[in-house]
Length: 219
Image (spheres, rainbow, N blue to C red):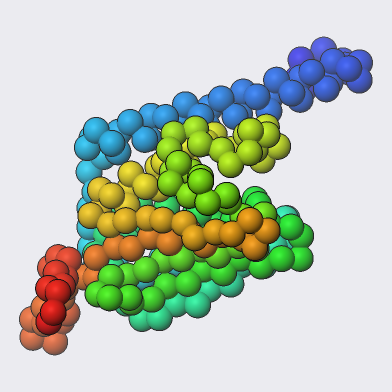
């Protein structure tokens, strides 16, 4: 019926079918996000960390979202310093794509989103900067909670499930990292997460990642 197999539908019926299709898609995304978050928080998702070039992860995430950004009229730029991160690459990609997708979603056309990677105080920092409406100071902590929305209309207008940032936080914390936001209303937001630097050992002529680098204060 939705495809018009039984003949053309009246205009009002077509609208109702489109609404139902959209809502069912949103429900599937919501269920998948809930299941993913539950698995991560309960430790049932096995993280497979490795020494990975952080810049490669940032560029892969941007390329995955390039069509979405192009459709939205938003430019996504990458500035990445060389660094090896000790992390599960698939889960870091998931975190980056969630953050970049949000940044694009809340950006106006002809605006830019910047993805920055660098070494800061012995950690690898990934930052996603947008120039959107910003987040009130009293929501900087709560925005990472389940079903958190800066504005009550966001779920309806932007199509999110309200679980993306909660999933990001859970993934980062499972890696022993941390995530936070810096934002001023009217001046955009910067979401940053920090993960351990990979420690490598040289065996012959080969560098092998063997775990996270532990930094001792004062050294």
